[in-house]
Image 1: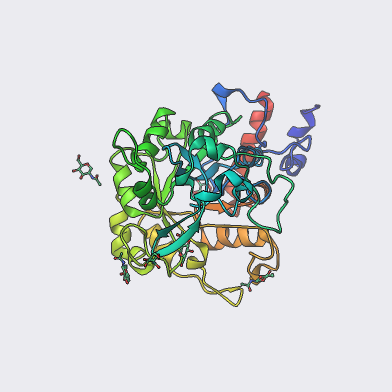
Image 2 (image 1 turned 135 degrees about the vertical axis):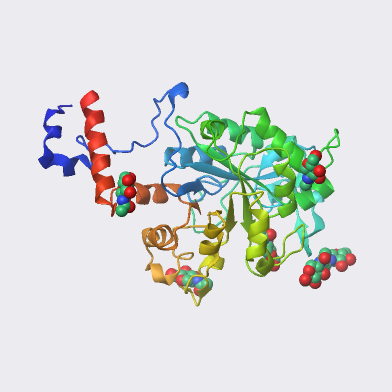
Length: 390
Ligand SMILES: *[C@@H]1O[C@H](CO)[C@@H](O)[C@H](O)[C@H]1NC(C)=O
Ligand SMILES: *[C@@H]1O[C@H](CO)[C@@H](O)[C@H](O)[C@H]1NC(C)=O
Ligand SMILES: *[C@@H]1O[C@H](CO)[C@@H](O)[C@H](O)[C@H]1NC(C)=O
Ligand SMILES: *[C@@H]1O[C@H](CO)[C@@H](O)[C@H](O)[C@H]1NC(C)=O
Ligand SMILES: *[C@@H]1O[C@H](CO)[C@@H](O)[C@H](O)[C@H]1NC(C)=O
Ligand SMILES: *[C@@H]1O[C@H](CO)[C@@H](O)[C@H](O)[C@H]1NC(C)=O
């Protein structure tokens, strides 16, 4: 590629799209070597691939996570549950019914159970009644009928360890974002031989693969991880086991916490944020609690983001989805308008999205729309000097 003409000031603007049309901030390269991987970006809100690239490929499968990495995820997100024999797996629902072919497996027809989950009787095929070997015989399917069905029946459930190895094998630094899912129910139904509880097994797994260190520490940047949970007692408990950063998930205003039976209002109060900030670096609220919705239109935002920020807590809301059935009408069916609103007006620090590729494109395409001219010139100058060296 001829590069000499690229130094002329007149073509600075061309540099913004790259002299050869190459993206300035390259997409994950399959050729990068493991010892010198592109670091995690920390200068803009985190792109958190919710259950992988779950808008495209059945959630929490290896294929969904690999696609999310290709598309530019900063973190791949997952839910950790357990099999009957105590192996930690990546799966969202407590029951297998919605997103696997368990209903077609006659050999498991007698496994249907009813358990009380957070005050409600729930009936189905629970992961805690299947061994890992049995779970591995199932195949995952797409949750929503309006998404691509071509991958149904192709991919197995993966374990926590398999998920970690996908992140560690990525061609650039990709963080993990596992949830301690339904700890109350898991600890009731699964007993580990060594007397340890679910949270101990969860942290042991992270340690086994070298995950450690506080937020933005050298160790953390090498292998970034956020631990998330809706259960405050689990977050407090694991704080004694690891200094990895934790995120307190917050459900809709009607749900009580599964372990402490506290209301939304209590856990988002200033005194509570004061308490929990000793254990977590941020909160992960359902986005409709930040911007309430009436008749499909977003309303005036609440003060939750500014109060969380005043307590030095990051805010990573969930879940951003491209489809019209999820987009509020204010966004005129444009997912980029939704990202723009949440990033540039609400000012969140991370976003859980089913469509990592869309969020990545939005952030790439707007990353030079910097209102600060001096910082823009600085970026251009550093690009030019790195070009000269090359
Ligand atoms: C769940 O079902 C059991 C057995 O039928 C019943 O005793 C219990 O009250 C039910 N719990 C709830 C929360 O409905
Ligand atoms: C954390 O460890 C301390 C010291 O060992 C102990 O006193 C405390 O009860 C522990 N907290 C939890 C939540 O386990
Ligand atoms: C919130 O409560 C509803 C039942 O009211 C339940 O269906 C839903 O799963 C709960 N959310 C979580 C995250 O537990
Ligand atoms: C949880 O709190 C609700 C409302 O405050 C109450 O009705 C319910 O009995 C409580 N449940 C438990 C298990 O304490
Ligand atoms: C909101 O509008 C979309 C169309 O843009 C529609 O698909 C969706 O069902 C509506 N949601 C509700 C809760 O009315
Ligand atoms: C603009 O960006 C530069 C470099 O990032 C920074 O030093 C400066 O304080 C910024 N100015 C304003 C007004 O934000």
